Image 1 (cartoon, rainbow, N blue to C red):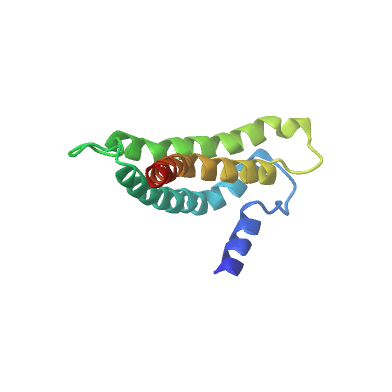
Image 2: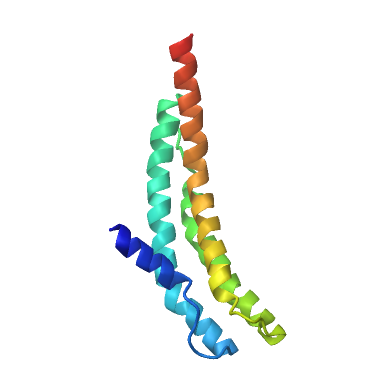
Length: 140
């Protein structure tokens, strides 16, 4: 499993083999869109599960209240893919400047790490709140 994850990670920001043109930049990004969307979805589902458990056990969620705004669940994949599209737009705009190395792999790596952080932030925050409250109750 870890070997497959490493191979996927390497492929996601592997430098293109062909000379850079705007069309090749777009093609490089679009070949990876489904994998990116799957990554964001899997990370989001994991985070949503952890977030729901943490907010429930932290005792912050009143009965009958939703832990997450349903509209946010619908909007998140759209915003993630708009941000993804910005990757090839930025690379395409900067292409005439002629970077010595393709910009796409660096933008992809930064985008994947940023997406991971954004998706895991709510569960990390509420996990910390739950832990803090649990330790406070145990100490007091």
